Amino acid sequence: PQPDDSLTFFTSVVGLHETGRSGESVYLRAWGDYERHTLKLTAHTTSGLGHLGLRVRDDATLQQLVGHLAEHNVDGRWTEDERHGPAYRICTPDGHAIELYWETQRFTATPEISTAFKNQPQRYVPRGIAPRRIDHVNLLAREVGPNRHFFQNLLGLRLTEQIVFDDGVEMGAWLSATNKSYDLAITRDKTAASGRLHHFTFMMDSREDVLRAADVLRDADVKIETGPHKHNIGQTFFLYCFEPGGNRFEIGAGGY
Image (cartoon, rainbow, N blue to C red; front, side, top):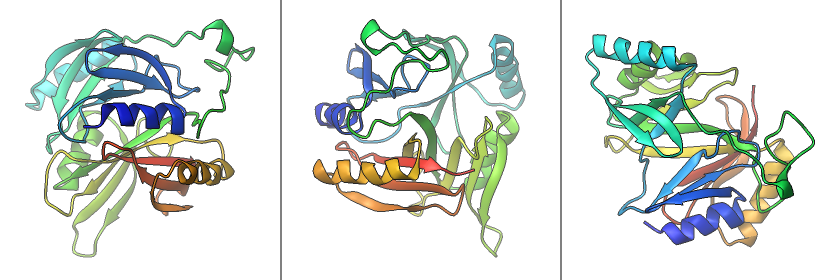
């Protein structure tokens, strides 16, 4: 709902790099992200998640997943974005839009930010907080169990941690698609609403970088909601703040 202020926050304060625009949307990435964008900001009437994109292993896996979802009565539709190939859009039981895609555009550095390191997409640019890469998304859900089942059993993510109360109610689930402790978290929405976003996270190299990020946010007059301190789940050192549009944003480092 505050597209200009949000763009200023993510480029000047956070230090993300703009890679393109289309209509009401701006595409951004961190300096260590290999794809042309990892965050798409779109003007809207409210804050929240437009969709979460998950890149699959290859085209054969994408087609296999589409058939697997149909067998389990999960309906979807094909969409296309000018910055990646065909994506199959589905909804979680809680109503979050998820896109599965394979074809993508790799970021190509211009000469002024090119790097001598062949395993980096560009050189480090120390602007604002300057995170290395996108890390994970935390979705709120009316019920954690059905949504965890959706990602774990239908999409193939691996469950790494849970919070289950003594009465058996599942309050949180953390799942991974990679060698990280988690790429996706699902936590219970105490308001009993559906389809909401808790936060999304960009990753720093060290705990000291998170402490420096707190200084950058303070100097930019951005209120820190909580932190810097350490998560029990995942053992990540982190802080939370809110971007001008109302979405919670996390800076993290470390963890297992």
